[in-house]
Image (cartoon, rainbow, N blue to C red; front, side, top):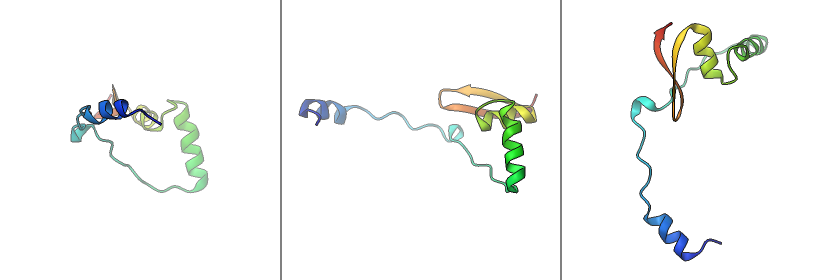
Length: 77
């Protein structure tokens, strides 16, 4: 159990600032058959272990590493 002093320090700490809207991730959803999904995932692993980064690299989308992860910049190349 945490001490009362620790709880007071934690409660009085300021929360981290909220991320800007543009920094939040956005979902990209599409449907594949089981065999297509397996083939796509196997191919993406050749580009990167992180699926989102691998997809961007496979498509030639510029990727920018941020403190919160990876964010595609939207342009090819």
